[in-house]
Length: 251
Image (tube, rainbow, N blue to C red):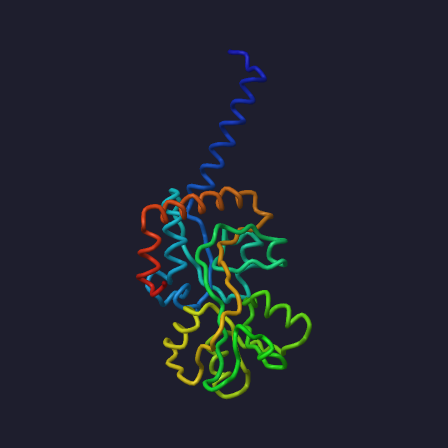
């Protein structure tokens, strides 16, 4: 029988660690997102929306398979933090989220706009226009920093219906005054539900980036995030990223 040295044991442990890591990355990653966020994420959209297609193609470029489940937005972050899912998307960075999650390179970037009833005098470049108004903010949604600051100071009120489609209907009948989202998303949702009484207001509230999130308490989170970032870079270099954006009505 050959003598097993300490060096042999170290090599064996290293090989085992590499194999386990490879196995964790080789499995189909369970991802989760939410509906009613056209054109970026919705199981009814082609490829699940622009963000979904980018996310899955980026993982694919990195050699990883993935599959998507769809949950209410308010449950997605907790489901990732509990270990049920590897990652979720697309989310804006907030101080609260940064405590519990790692953020990928931006999946997409956008201009945040105000949407309100036709004829409203609200302006994204002059937030004094929204003071004492009622913002519609579904559970799981976050407000861009300038709006979040006003919320924290109780300068505006908040309504929290279940989803953005309900939000738009509330604004149309005067039960809320406005919502804020990426301009492309807002216009796409208005077109999807055929609502003409709510329109985009002038001015840009903020410019934001939206990301894939992995949980800090997951031992594989950094490897998954690195793989995604590498795949995303490949998509952009090859031109595939731009094609996906244009196919989904992006700019």
